[in-house]
Image: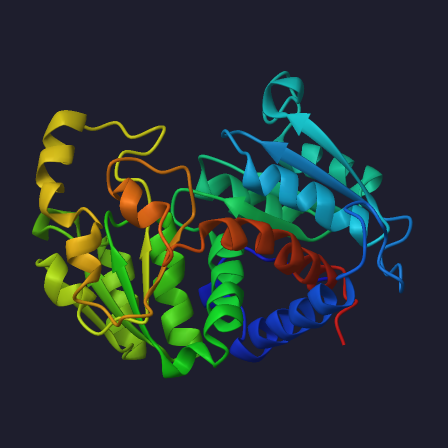
Length: 309
């Protein structure tokens, strides 16, 4: 049994194995309908339990399709429908119940501690569908998308992130170290990652550089990533934050500093951090990026269920 919680804790060879498996599975589905099951039907009879404590579109849909295409099934439960430490039932007891009924558990949560507690008590694998400090399924899928579009290993590319320091960036930083690619980060001085992330970069000597000038960060980039500056649950003065990021909007002028064939990616939903010209332009591959979540989610499930060879 293998959990999928943080990229930094998963061996690089296993992450590469997941991506390679996803590439094969996507190729084999070219003539398939959406709900057609993969020919090998590898997860027949398996049940994935999903719980969402935060809003979700792509993660919810991609995991639903992923387990279905692998031959299994899924059920969604709401946090307010469970005891989860209330009413005399401990979180550990809830984990035992989930382990009894299901074969895997995908949790999208507002608490890193909750994922950690579940991982200790579950006897089935847990997948982090998003937490405050990490979004591993998103970023591993993004690595897949980059290599598919650029037709080369991400280790040979210059990757750029422009925007806020959040859970997606934390996972991208972890990916940079695991996959050995250069990462340039453009953000205002006050918005660098938290101390534990910076210490991790220092410990593993990642090829990661911070710039407080978006143009310098974008220079010579093969790929530019971004995310919404104001997230759904951002408890900050939004007016001030938007003002602080006004020089970090990804527009046609800014991507002019990158390579001519630069690819723009965004995990969605979007905000004012990217102009319509870029988001809807020829350099943007956000719709392919979103669809690829399904293919990589499938291989993550195979990994967690011990079916990846």
